[in-house]
Length: 415
Image 1 (cartoon, one colour):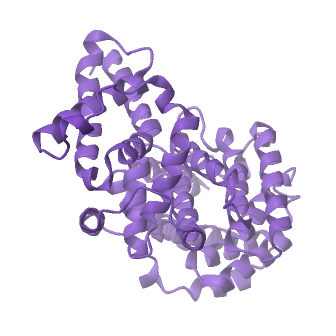
Image 2 (image 1 turned 45 degrees about the horizontal axis):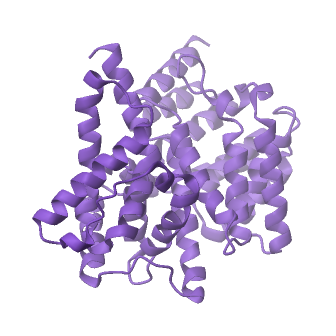
């Protein structure tokens, strides 16, 4: 593959992330949910056409508008052939650039968010369908984000599409009370979307900023909407704190940089300021300490500390303990163990680590072994430190993660 072809592939991939959900939303608003399958096929066809055409004709000045027009034309042809739409109903005016502006797309995208979170759909199906439809996730990415195998993901997608088609859901806002209940699931899927970007499951990339920004874009729609509540503001705050550290998380060679080794001068002060703003807004909106609010408070402690040593580890332990009581999540317990190691509560950390049931480490085995490595390194147990790292390497899925862990093992063996 030539450099030009790689460049075009990169451009198309970026446009896919930026416009897939927007295109689905726009076409659903025009042609209805009963035509979802035709809409998805037309959108994918527009990307394939771009991959074939652009290497010879060049990248259009407005690639997104080109994709919209191409998808719209394909969709009209498909609907006409399938006799799903009459000549009188056909919109032959095409897609204008003003039709795909952020202002024009905002309402349809929010409608799609809440449409997917229909109470008759299972929560797991809602999450899968939202990640697929609004953000164009592949089956592998959804599988990683939800810790489910690919076969299950495919079944959920097919079941959801069939249900929407059978019930011919109207593409409109639900009533006020139902909107509020659906907001919980909207928050959850945006949280998952951001996490898939910040802790990427992609075999080659540690972080995917485009996915993070997509989650933040949709979340910004929500915080500016009258439905926004303390959870919405806390979620936005959490995203701002995390993205502020983006530039310091990966080195020039694409290798991950752990928190203790990050250059804090690279942290984005504006995003930290925005994180503070939304966290304060969340606290003013409600005194209830929600999960997102606690996680945002935790991120704030790291962002506000001048260095690792000045971090308020005691407060972090309290916050993680509150979080752990809410759901007994093993990943939270692993964070408590790390905090205890920074507080030199080594014996307590050891007891907590040994209490974990390894058979329940669904999707977080590598993290578990990495925490074990830190624990035994602190205990100066060389043999168990190496063993934990070796098990972490065996459980790692991506080449980027495996390479990082192997280099760490080499360093430890030299000590």
